[in-house]
Structure formats: C-alpha cells, structure tokens
Image (cartoon, rainbow over all chains, first blue to last red; front, side, top):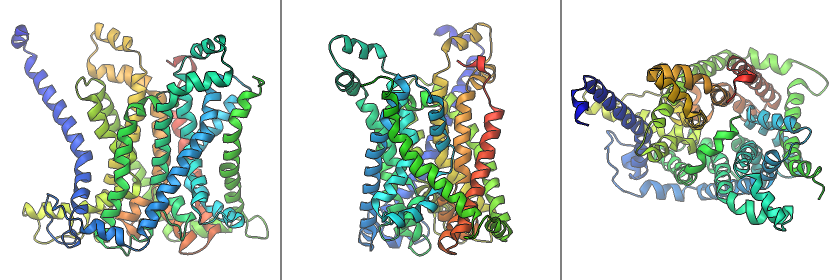
Length: 278
Length: 281
C-alpha cells in the first residue's frame, strides 16, 4: 500500500471516493428526510402541527395520533384496510402460486398465450376496471363489501404473484423433485415434502408484496366502497376537509406497515424481480 | 393424475379469475363508453374531449410523465451502478433506497405536503434562513410552477425505487466476465457502463420503463393530496366524472382514453428498446 501514495492518481481517486460516498449519503438523506418530517408532524400535538415555524425535532406528543384514533370512522377504515389486504394476500397466493409452478415446470400448448395474458394485465391501468365492476358488484350484492374490494385487489396482485412464484420455483432444481420421486414420493408428496419447505420463505415474501399492493391502493378502493371505506379511501375522501394533523397521522399509519414489510422481504426483492423481468 | 392435464388444471384458477375480473370488466367499460342505451355512439368521447378541462388535464399528465420518468430513469441507473460496486453496507443502503417502494402514492403526497404546506418545513427552513418574512402559501393558484414541482418531486421520491429494484436485478444477471474482459482491454468505467451495462440491461430497462410510464399516466392520489383541483390530471377527472358528476359513461370514455395512451406508449417503448433474438444473455 505504500507505493500507492506515490501514485499521481491517488488524489483523483480519493476525490472520486469522496464524491461517491457523499452521493450515497445524499441519496439516503433524500429518502429518509421527508419521512422524518412526517414523523415529526405525527409525534407533535395538533397545535404544533398547525403552528409556524416548525421545530426540526419531534416533541413526542401523542395528541395527533389519539385525535386520529378517535376520529369517527377512522378505526373502522383501518380495520377494513387490514381485512382487504389480508384477503388479497391469501387469494393471490392460492390462485397465483399453482400457475407459477405450472409455468416453471411444464411445457404446454398455450403457455406463451397465458404468459401474454399475465403480462398484459400488468401493462394495463387496472384500477380503471373498478368502474364497471362497481355496477357488476351492485347486481351480485358484493358492492361496498370488503370481499368485493379484495377481489379487485387480487386482480392487481395476481400478475406479480404468478411471476414471482414462477421465478422462485424456477430457482429450485427439478432434479430435487425427481430424486424424491425415485425415493417413492408421488408428485404431490414430493411437492409438499421437498419443494414447499424450500419455497415457503419466498412465498411469504410474495404474499407480503400482495398485502402492500392492496394496502396502498387508492383509486379502486375509493370507487368501490362507500360505507366500508378502507384507510386510503377514507383519507382521500376527507382530504379537503380534514385538518392537517389528521392527514399527517393518517399518512404515518399508512407508511408504518410499508417500512416493516419492505424490511421483511428485502432479501427476496431482487430475486423476485430477476427472472420476473423476462 | 394425468401429467398432460396437470398444467392446465394449475393455470385454470388464474385464467378464470382474470377472465372474470379483468377481461369481462374491460368489455363492460368499452360497452359503457360506446353505448348510450340505444346503440353505438361516440357521444361520451365527444363530451369528454370537448370539456374545457380535458386539454389541461391531458397536458398536465403528459408533462408530468415527461418530467418525472427521465429523472427517475437516470436516478435509478445511477443508484443501481453505485450499489453494484459497493462492498460494505450494500444491504443497508439498498434497504433505505427501496423504502419508498412500499409507500402508497397517497402517503407520498401527504409526506410532501408536510414540506410544502403553508406552515410546513420548507417555509420553516426559509424563514429560519431569513429568506422570507412570513410563510408563503406555495400550493395555491398563484404558484402553479411550485405545485408542479412538488408533485413531480413526490413522484420521483416515491416511484424511483421500483425502477431501482428492476435495474439492480437486471445488472445482477450480466455476466462478470464481460466486465473483466473490458477491464483487460483498458475500458474506462464510463465506457464499460455505456458499452456493456446499458446494452445488456435492455430487457430490464424495457420492463422498468413500461411499468413506470403506465403508472405515470395513472397518477392520481399524489395530485389529490398536493394540488387538489389546482392541477387537473386525467385520472382525477375520471374520478370526478364517476363521483361528482355521476356520469359513468363519460368516466368509461376517459378510462379508455387513458388506456389508449398507455398502450401507445408501451408499444413505443417495446419497439425502441427491443432486444434482437440472438443478443439475449
């Protein structure tokens, strides 16, 4: 390393390293600082939130949050959001994962057509479909129900569920399954005893992804629910009228699960997208 | 079980589900848009396009997409290449950078509202530095440029992460040998980026751009939180037709217009970034 010091390129390399590190720090700040501002507003009393100028440290007052919790309809909306997202999570995996398995293990006629259908749904402003579904749901009695909205959100999440499970199953060598067959397993037991334990963490990750998709969805939720609003729909509807501290506390509650979920699936995020790309 | 039937049984649930909740409602939208109860008509489209807000909301949506998507692409490429050569703390940095991936557009709008509103942090900062005497109302009709900027920043902040994830995954698929060979021949990092990373990243760039551009035309909640009625966009107008004006025929027509724009841009991107058959990794 002593020879490096005599190298005339050291200075530029040091400068380059400095620029590199400060760019990384800057980009981290770009993501975190707005979130920090939201945190300050959430942990301040309603009076502070509406006052000026703002302090740059939170005062750890739970006034805004308790106002949020006591606001009429808010807790129901929160409950609805969790319910819809939970249903979406289960349905998209139950419906989507078998197709992902089929895509990774079999060559069958119409496979390309099927993949095209899946890709097409992704290249489509899906929330728009909520408009005609509103009419269809009124006819079938699904209007303004948590389950009806979960069906729409499942449609949003399914392309991702199929493509993600497809890439996860492709990561498990077929030889493992074949070995199980020769050792006396049937197709089903080979799947449950060999493939499933290996794939379970990945499946969980894609289920969480489906949860987040539903949790965050605004347009379809606002169109399809009236009494049983989800949190996003409730906040959107009350944007004009609600006081600032209610908006910020609501925004904060929307963000928290996202932070936890992204942390939980971070290992799979890139593997999921790697093959799903093609 | 019959091995030839098995794959079809496995894909049956998804196919049924998508037919019922994707293809069927799509046909319904088309019917609603082109039908006034007595037969085929273009009335809904004429009404929607002729409305004075339509050109403004179309212009706003397109301008926003044109301002946001290129910045996001550049930023995501920069972040992806920076992460790629990182040795220490790669996981932590990636986690931080992908946080916005889980944040909804509505929440992102609210977050940036905390910065731009009248008693917000931007005003606090500026008055702390003595740049202004009293807080300014940035998000009002007197400052259309700032409203636009706030919405664009919120979108860039929120949705760069999805591109980043796709690009990082894509860069991971490029064989390291290419870089080693290029280094042996003395290619600079800059040249390696332009000659290896970018061309081989084309499939990922395609996916990332298609996804982002479509979502950019669907922009709705960020605008609702930050601009309200100050900044009409296509999706917001669709919502207004459905709820404020209770005109579902017009809403359906708007939906089809947004769809047509999305498909048009998707085709352009697919064509511009197409990967020759022999050039796939």
